[in-house]
Image (cartoon, rainbow, N blue to C red; front, top):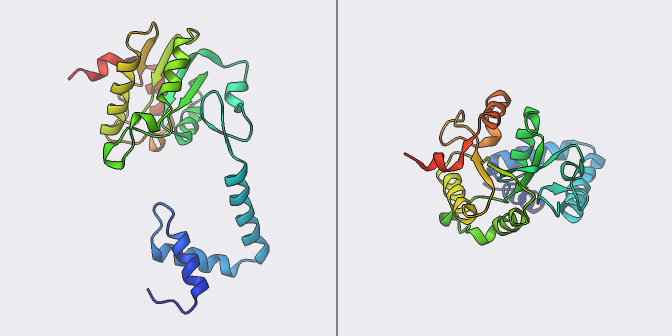
Length: 205
């Protein structure tokens, strides 16, 4: 792709670093910004910079938050004895939209994937184990996507937690195998939370 401007080329190259954004889409977005008032582009840049500089991870669940303790963990009406284990904030948002879960969350920050160089030490699994060992948690609901990486992560956590006195369950397989949680409709996801099954049963063929 030939550019008449180095500034344009640099902007397109940076935009195309975003997931799912190719060079042609990046060019279209950059040219769109060029047509907008300068203040709009400035506000976008400031919002992204402020997000990157000031965003925090909740000290309790590792969810993205503006403050040290996210709104969910700080809510006294949530059931602290039940924790739903998810991959990232997108899954928290998806489950919250079902209005079927009133416990807390634990955000792993990804899934075990040797191909992508992601191992257990790259996730927040150890802090989850330590949290359960404190004895307040009665049930863990594993709500990872039903992919090979999700099942691998579930099994690894199961092995780490199976000797601790806590109920381990997983969402029901109303979700198709291979589907990502964030794309599942709210009704199906809500029913999967309600109809959760013992985690050990999910490893049986």
